Image (cartoon, rainbow, N blue to C red; front, side, top):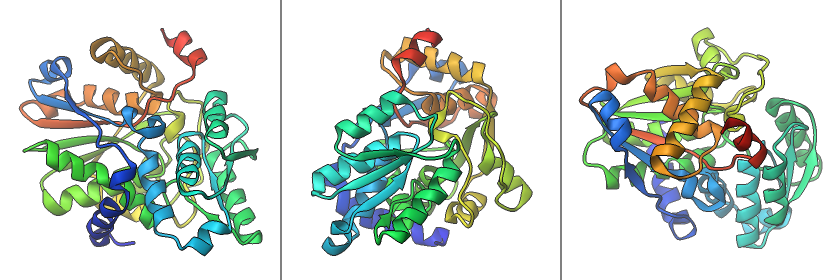
Length: 319
């Protein structure tokens, strides 16, 4: 997939999925704005169905399929949010799905997947390993593998966030987006830059798992280990040959990494000032903004708050 193709796919996704998703609130943040002398707005995907932006991409992928393809069954790999989105979408469309998760996936996210109707199976201890295994299972059983990020329709679905941002803001100078496999930032960046070429797209990752950032710097997809991180939604490796690698190289203007302490501090800060729950991956984007305050001065800034799915045990330890 070339970056030039993204805007068309995003517009197709908008037509397919609009009635199945929420247009999430873009909330002004007085506190974050004052810190930089900027106008800062938070795109609240934590209020999306399933508590995450992931339902956009999955729903677009499934609605792009034939009835026969849906009937043959669906498989994916996920740390939780993508799996929950697949379970939600299959439930809505009358299809069936299997979600493979790493052994260390959040138990609360796994419970959410099961409650939405999908079957959960365990394999491996890293997202990339789980993905490769799930793809093989899909191929061997004549089922369709739904990638969390390495898929044009998934990228297009995530990009519908950018359509909403354009509707909701007259001016967008900088957008902070959490970065794992790159599907979210590719969709947002690809569409926004087609209508606003001057917009700066910032990819935000935890120091403990920055495979895409290091791969972009090396000029090739690297097989790197990931340390434990509160940002489990962005953790893990990148599938060999992922289309998001070249898209990130072309569309992302800057990269920021944040420590686990910075993620925790930002999560607490957002809950205190905005009075709502977010997960670690969402706090990564907020923490990244806090590291770029000087650059954001006088700018119109959007921070994509990508999800709300954090376990009560983790939340308790943070608070």
